Length: 193
Length: 184
Figure 1 (tube, each protein chain N blue to C red):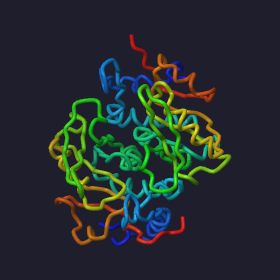
Figure 2: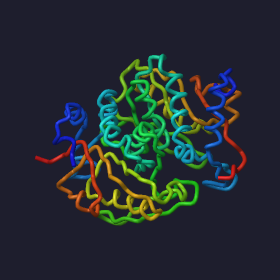
Figure 3: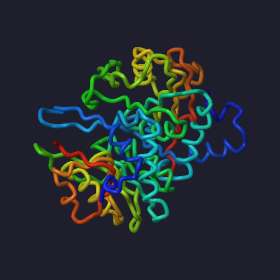
């Protein structure tokens, strides 16, 4: 599940090392105690960004995936390129009020309050094989809502893909029964950006 | 300049995939929905290829994309031409030190932000969004890049609404679009 652990070969190891080092840690954002994993610095390194997308494309290319669903907004940044790389549709999953057509909505619980994710009706057909993309998975609340949305449309969620995943997911290896494919664990120390 | 006028054979496929949703977000607006374009892998790839063919080899080191639909088109273009991707975001989304640019909306104001240090002086940049309407957001984006000393080479959008005259608002900066939407 964690690519670095799963017998990734030497070449892939060095790509992942560079990807990890390109991610900036911003302490206490958005609030005290959170070490925010900032992927915008990864996007400033064309080689590392390309390697990130290539690792996902190589992983999914032969898995017969017809849909990449990306969680707004950072899931868009990685998801659309992966979709193009594997020849799949790209389906944006958005905050309420953004999608202009008929939507289905799925609420989910935050630490304080609730939020909501929406998808266009008809974007995904029953039985399509889907992966869900976001930059990072923490509690899994958003991804769980995304899984429910796709399953309500009759799709098969094959895997959830994230650049970064919190380490306790290492123990669970799955989210709501769906496999997770995660490149890296979060860095905990400010890294001199 | 609009590629549509040059009749590249891929453009027809792209234009027909864009869904027009009347009266969204409010009465009278014919919303240009690009999500249906994204459901056609060939048409989406053609869209990206048209931009890449134009910008590859032109020494562009930055593709700046406007949140959120600019995040769908911008990164694949950046990757293909070997440029950085810089997200331009609504306030309080970017975690590091930012510079902000306010801009006027029909009613009220909005604001676009960019990370300090993302772009260096002298870099050649593109601004990418799905659509240009009045040009207000694109102008704010160009202002951000120019304030840090970058050169905005061109603004690139999938769709233009020429009746809203956004092109004129761009202060002489070139605009490249693939399709125009004109209400009949």
